[in-house]
Length: 170
Length: 196
Image 1 (spheres, one colour):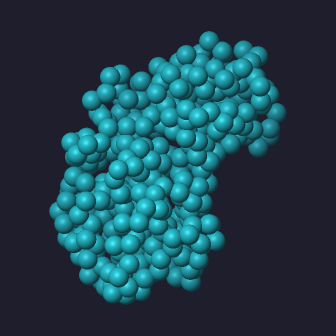
Image 2 (tube, chains in turn cyan, yellow):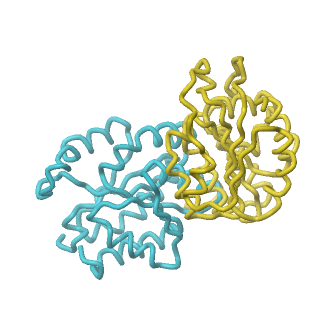
């Protein structure tokens, strides 16, 4: 996904249309152009967090100031957030939109991400967190659905981006 | 300084501020002393994220002062928070770390207290960093900490409580709605009653 790939611009527009104005991120190689675009857009306050759990804490607090928030991270980082999600968002029923990369799927050549392919979705199922796959460009519109669903459900919802979609190949 | 005396003093002086307490003694003792259930978010369910949770509130509430009260056990779980808080530089966020050198709510099991948390904050780039070993020192500086806009990180060295205190008898959704409705009722943005 090159920096000028229009897919990033479409995701950013979709986030803005939802009312999201805070993006807290920790990068994965697949989403660095997306993060760069969020950071450069004055409609958003972008916060580069030290670890993914910090994004969960910051964005969850932002709910109480009426700010729409998006926690953006890689699949591995998401897996480190189970404690924060279950203890903060589940205990207090705080909605949050979380964006992750779907690392480890067939086609991902990174050996160190194959564990995500094996365990990411089963872990999400184990904690009953709603998951919306963004696998094609047309799916970007589902970001708004996921954001709204999180609000209705009063729990977090995960949107997962594939590499092919992020590259504009699907 | 005496932990309970410190919190009694803070409870007396922090009358208008929004307060977020971390898991363990900070939540338990604040509840025991104040019984407050509206302007306080007892983040009892999670260690280490109270100050960033508070930062999220502060981001969209520039007219309010947000105070985070964290234990040092919680702080040590995520000291990188200092870099994020420095990056945010929120003028209305005041972060106090209650350093008692132990996990207060788990039988006060001690942990090695050899780290200078204030020095860590300064090294992270924060300019307004305080370190208090006495209540008198805190009393002298608190007005400035609160009244002068700017992010503050402050370490309060306290002794272990030496007794058990109990968690606030509030379920998570009750904490959420009491706190959120209070913010809405006192001039904050709509949190719950927004069109979907």
